[in-house]
Structure formats: C-alpha cells, structure tokens
Image (tube, rainbow, N blue to C red; front, side):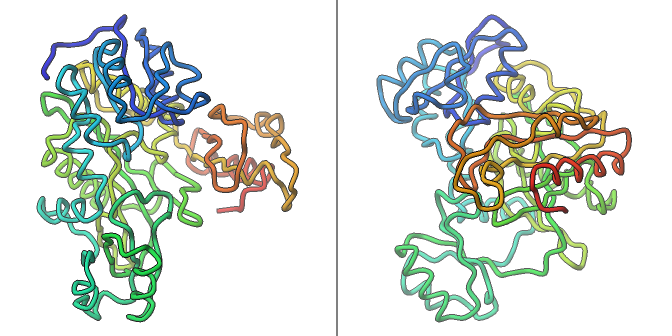
Length: 388
C-alpha cells in the first residue's frame, strides 16, 4: 500500500518487543510520534515504553487487525517475525521492510542465492535438505560450518564440522532440517555496513564498522573501522547498497562481511532491521539507525549520516551480573563506569539477567579513536569484560 509522508503526531507500529523495538520507540517518540508494539510478552522491553502494547502472537488475526487500526505504518525489529504477518498488515498499511524482503533474510539458502544473484561474493556453500544432497557435498567445502537455514542468530543453529562423519552427525543433531554448509575461510576480521533505503530508492549509509564476536555473539564494535583501507570500505558500502537495491528494500538493513586474510571481502549475512553493531549511532552520529528507521517508514527525507565522534560499543551480556561465577545476581559498577569521560550507558529494561542475554550496551565516544579505545578498555576492566 502506498502513502504520502506520515508526519509526527501519527502512530507508528513495530512488530516485536525486544531492545531494538525499544530503541525504535524512543526514537519515534522523540520525533513526536505515538507508538504501538505487537509482542506477546507482557514485560517486553519495547512494550513497557510504548503508548500501546498489543499483547498477542505475531500471527494472531485480532492482534494484526488492532495494529492495522491504530498504526499509520508498521516496521519490524526482529528478522524472525513471520513474513505472513507483514504481508497481512501491508494490505492496509505501509510496511517497511516488506514481507518479501524479510522472507529472504529469514532463509540462509535464499540469502546466499540473493548475494550471488546480485554479484556480491559470499563463502562457497551448499544447501542440504535431503540425504542425497548431504552425500553430494563436495570435499572442498570441508572443514566448514553447518548452519540451519532458518531461525538461527547469535551463533545458534551452527556447528563446525571438519570431516564428512562430523557433517553427517551434525545434520542428524539438527534434526535434518534444511541447512547451509559454508566452507571455513581464513578470516582476518568482520565488518558491517548499515544502509537505509527510502521508498523513492534513495540510499544512505553509516560508516563501515569493525566487529569482534565472542561465542557467536557480538562483543565490541569500533567505528570508524580500524585497519580497513578506503578501497575496501568503499567496496563494502557498494555491495551493501547493491543488495538493498536488488531487494527493492525499504528500511534499515545491515550487511555483515568477512574480510579474509588476503584482504578480499565476502558477504556473511544480512539483518532486515537496525543491528547490534549500529547501536553506537545513537551517541556517535548525528542521525541514529533508529531515526533512519522512522524516516524510511514515514517517507521523511534521508540524509547521509555523519559520525561526529570516534567510538567503541561494548555489548553488556547477562554474564556481567554474575561476577567470578557467582550464582547471586549483582548489579555491575555503573557508577564507576560513568565516572569515565565519554561513556553512554543504555540498559534495556530486562530484570532477569542470564548468561548470553543482551542486557544493554555501553558506547564510549572520544576526540580520537585512541582516546575512545583507552576509555573503553578501562570500562571493560571495571565491568569484568575481557580486554580486546
């Protein structure tokens, strides 16, 4: 459904009530919009701060009807919101990104095919959805990483395999669902690019950022990305823009890339929403990724964002609430952290800390990349985060 510019005062809807939805709600409200969240969890981080919280499952017909009635436009904060729900809403309201675009991002096999189809290199791979395809996997893809085609994130649904026997066992352990086997490549590091694309095809991007993962979960993001030549950064941006354009994408899209040991670039995966690696944009850019999400879905103008401060973003996982293996939940030393110049604390309103659960993030801005890194290392030491 097409519509003109949706101005402040209207209600904007978001499917999903997690921390990405919470930060979207904050951005929309700061711009003068009302908000509605659809999420079944009565204590969802976004639902707790929104004007309206529709507490139903994503595919609940009554919930979708209520969202359509209250919201002038709808977005999503989670790639595993069913594409059918977005398609249902799109019959009566502008939805960005579209169900069609999200459905590609929900399936690793389709995602890899999309990268290849628009000329963006990705890791050599094979799709496995039958014993015959399993047997036909070429030896050249081993050692590799076997990933479920759907519902995998933060390292879930992934198994490293070195031999054919390990591959066979891993596919059995994953219940023989459709999987993608990716050849393990000699990685130097990972970067990501966040683009925003409007209804009229206008595309802008945030500066390339460098990411460090631990146990499959993002731990640290640094912007601007250190050790990335201008030519490589330009290639990453061009590839991300091409991927968005070929999806006819509207909204905020993150593409993660691997930089290989030989300096070449391959696409890893994409997320049809704002991304953990872009949280620093709230404090370090003149326009955040969440304001861009609002602008895309409402038809407001997109401007090329400016990184006004070098920064590092530290993910704050539930592990920090249990120092030295303690079984008793202890609040981290926020006062100590906030004595450090340039620290910006964001907690997501989750009271139940668990290992690996994203509880918040800390962005450290500085006059120079070196100054920001120095403070970030001090903050990490106070919090019990491993140095980087």
